[in-house]
Image (cartoon, rainbow, N blue to C red):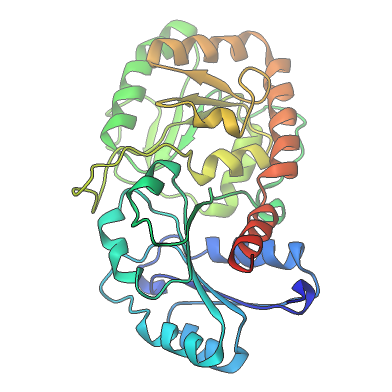
Length: 323
């Protein structure tokens, strides 16, 4: 099959009324268009996906995102793809937190892509399952790395218990360093930790804050919705690791495993810490050497552009689905 003649449908796995990550599908579409400029790429909501599949007759329909909700029924889309002779693949971006619900698609998927490497071993061995991290978008996330006039330490994300523990422990370090934290997101309690503002930021504002901040905290999620069967511990860093790198951020990552070393080089592209004390020590390095913040950001940005864009992920999907 000629890749420049491909017809590809990218469709969300969750109805938009319930989909907090609906915007990510446009980044996936952008990646396919960049990787395969002569191909026909259609990006659709879940609600309009079946109609688009019937009209386009795609070579590949890629269902992207969470598939956990009962309102997501992929049977009609799978039947349409069988009739038209195309492939149906799923790129699941909520492993392992929703892993127990994945069985609903096992009988209809030609290929499954999981965002989390640790989850691979828990899929049935007869399935074509591949590891594929999320990525960053050059069009959405890239910013020039010029100056750090914003927060001394910035974090944006929902409050989970592990995040609250870290920033609670960091509060006294911040006071000792004479620097402030800026923490925004849903679920936080105002004034519970110095520097917290309980609010949602629009996605378009995040890259500007990543680029302006002296340090950007990278702290994963430690809460599952449907992961009781195997209690899988996640290993792959989330999408904001790559999004912040595209923005040229100087990231300090609280690590629970070493998979991050596959994506970024420690001390030259990202700073790593095992606990709050180690995190504070890395933050102090940046406070004392602002040029280091800029150099880390430039290095991470080059790496992200070369390896961690959605165009890189799109090429891998096509290579594996049509191998």
